[in-house]
Image (cartoon, rainbow, N blue to C red; front, side, top):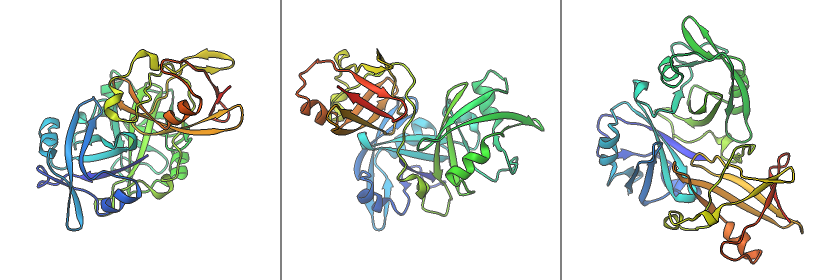
Length: 324
């Protein structure tokens, strides 16, 4: 999971200056140069050009359309999550007034006016908007980079909402400092997904170094996946129901959702001879179209034909899929 963040100044409506190290990321992380797709959290798609000039890169052609359509204001925080499978960016945008933030998201920056040493302050506007003016007092599961899964509790002090129990563990596990921004997606009332970015206005804006090598994995416990074997983004939209992937757990074939949240989940398929295929999954859009990388190698090696169904057994403890 890669990404960066930018603070939009007054003069950045027609172009956006990208972090100084973007040119290095083109080589190191295969970041795009030239025209690239940009997707919002509600499914809007824009095309902008990454333009290189002197020692900097910019979002140029098409960026003004993004600013006008999303009504981005000066002083906005913009977080771009790189979708490697699609060579595109997913954009989170936050204004000074968080009421205008994407509906399922909120962000946190340490050392705020209401912060406490052992608790994380949550803007009440977000909670009121998503929870019908109620304050949760039940545990919430926060899933973060790697295998991080922390049960936290929300409590109210001095009429302000905080994450208390579990916050210290998150800070220590991910080395959270005042330079970081945490972006939370509310999956439902009991589950939040968390993304961590370095967002100092004066620093190179990249993910914390300790997260570069983290394999982004989750326990798979949900309900349906529709996938395509397409190696090209345009082919994904032509998928059919024949691309449904049955998966087994506890000797019973059941459908399972791969919640990928627009970034990779790394999977391993192991056959009876011990051969291993590394498969990566990325989502194309909120309507459920998926892009699968390296699945063609697995299908070709097993001499499968179009529309052939196959079953994988998911091993919860090891995070792998077995193919008989």
